Image (cartoon, rainbow, N blue to C red; front, side, top):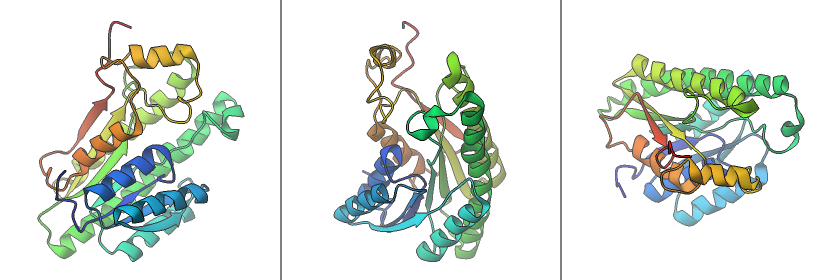
Length: 262
């Protein structure tokens, strides 16, 4: 494990459960000393993440904010920088869940609009503000180590997938990935921006889905299995590592090798 995260500070949006929690814990194990656990409404989950961080030796800071709201985004920015001071790693993991819970009952248009509001507009506007703050920080401290921002994309966003899911998540995640690459072009070399593009990852939806999707998830990976949240966390650690100063504007496909034989 790299020691370059030692005594650094980080923010992981949407870290009350699932992928976000795994990323937060991996950063703590890598040496991050203070980390913002962001959540929208899952306070109990955020508390569980915070407890797990303390067990590792990382000081958690819980911040609730709705990223679809201008006030919510500003609250997160202000709270994160006022509490942490300097931030070396920012992970944009938060996204709307339209596959489980009450949102699953919405029609296609409702789901698409919700994803656009949270995953695209919210992420873009938040990230522009954060990037400016990180640039100011690097200039103020005269640090030779660039800050890092990591986004979560989707491996099939640019290739396309059949059905409503492909027609929703494809354009949404493609927009996020394109924005991340443009941000990297804008702010290099003082800010590194990379994207992790997962394939089939067993989250809450994958734990309760049908045999068809289980077979498809395993069959479309050369490694013959679902990915898991820890797989993503490991990739984020690689991309965000402060010692990885030559890695930026990259999209890392994390799908176990996409199988053409399925």
